Length: 353
Image 1 (cartoon, one colour):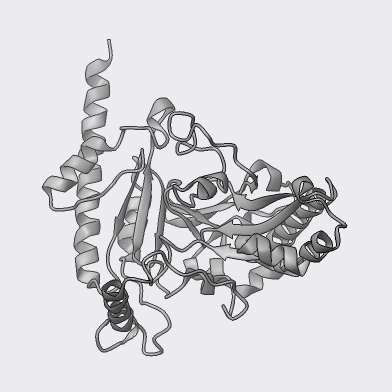
Image 2: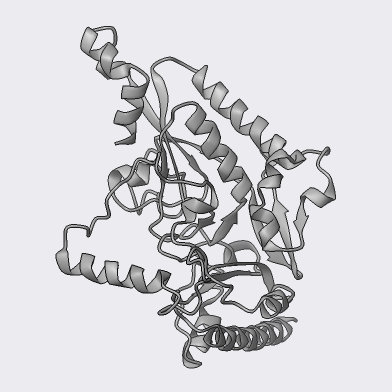
């Protein structure tokens, strides 16, 4: 749909009809971010960068027909929000105050658009797109696809919303359709009905795509009712009176405490999600890692069922979950981390010659 829209907007369909272009000479690529995940079907796999999901044993037909940018990420460590930049964006000109934040709200503040880091993002993204445009007239970036704010299956990474906002604006200025993949982030998962709203004010200009279950009458009825419950302050006590955003469900002090644990590398907290990466080394890092298994099993015995992504684990509650339940979950998680770290320390001491 996006490629067709791009072809129409840029006169490619008209030129084909007039015989000015040869169809077989055209090539369309997607613009996406490293670490994103967009599904298991053939086209969706081609729209994501090489990863554990795209190796030969998983997808022997994979080629990766896209251009993939390294995004900056945000995380909590030792009680503060920190910004991590990929090599292409690192600069000696950036000041320390550009790299840390006292609160999550600062990350979404529109004033960051005119900051040094915002100008750095803009120059980088504009340069990348201009370079691609100059590479050849038969190859086109026909669409941008991204997971808003959170890369889920890729390891629960929080992408700097400023970077995504500038990327979206740049693509829209070049009439490149933008696709928000909200399989994970939609329907209040990140504390707002659509995570796309964290990057812009309106979806009226969006190319909307129906969900795969939208023709199932019973599924649609249940979904409509659930959405009504989620956004109504009378049925969802977590919703603000305006009905536009949820209150924080996770206790900030407990999350900061977890972020300062010696066994934790990074933490993210947004909406109904809390995720953390365990401090690990070598083969214990990444999706194939079994490093977190003993912790996951211990938490399961304590009534918490979670799925690990290698050495990354995460908690997700529902939009209507009581903050008291979330506090209980965080307390159990912290106790589990203490026991997990102690057992790892004892094992290392036992293995020493």
